Length: 456
Image (cartoon, rainbow, N blue to C red):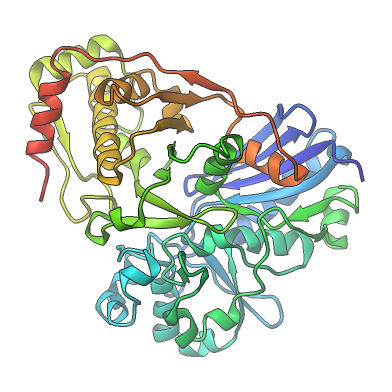
């Protein structure tokens, strides 16, 4: 069928969205969302795959111009997989934030491959997908013995929509401990534990797995010829938009924001990656390793600014700098200073706008630190919610006067990447806006004070 509308299933750790994108223009014409709340499980907390699926089918059935939808592209967060038995029933869909995974931390650490092989750091909770699988294999051996397939999260949804199973490298290479990014093959751990044999055949993110299943067509009213793409990891989707637009740029960095702030640096030397700083190699949609650092920027922002943060303003930032107020990492698990408790300095009595300015300043300082660690001098592109923060980009430009800092327009991220994958052709570069530098006189001294107080 003609490709007129593209449906993007965008499952983040906090929210799940269904987005309709015009194939010709790239305009977002409709979107709906729901929370991505996990649910309680017998042994480990579970991703709400049943609830999300019921909502997805209802939303597709209610979507305007549903008959024009010619492709569906799943885009999801990483460190997630769904285990399926031979009858197609879910054995487990573990939530990586369940602390129960830490119960096997030491036993699992003895099983992991060296960081030099996987470029996947040892992470807390279940942030290494391998630890989730190890936990289930150790604690529920009879249930794990029923597993016929391990489906990475985007490909689980592609399978539910099309009936065709696949695997894909952007999710496989997302700090799972299952992949060797430089060698381009499964880790020794994945082979030894039998997990590699349970992962379906590798396909490209833009590969069409098939049309929607007759069941999905009947339940949604979509055209039976609507095709389902393999799908992609969400931060890699943001990175892909800029990678295909800058094929000749050897060194640039994308700051993909949301619950996670993922900093992906094209051209970063793998030798710059250090496990103790929670640095890693992601794998892009074409299979190449990408130097990466990530921290839970969205969660940390809320921890500092509050659940309903005010808008950060220049006047509020001036008060933060005048006081020498600082936020020191970390306020969420994982990140370059994982294991250190976050704390505020000289922040007593700050009002809501000032706390939002302090949270923004903290994320800008942390991003600046990470870019130095990766030795990235080139352009910095801010994508996602941080692109709309009025202080983050300008502060980052003030902290890095030798770099070009730009913010992405509203059509980037999962929607634009899905359009590229669905059309299979070169697209116009995503709109980028130059960021004006914000460099108050106290900025340099506050930056030096912050770095001096960082945990070693």
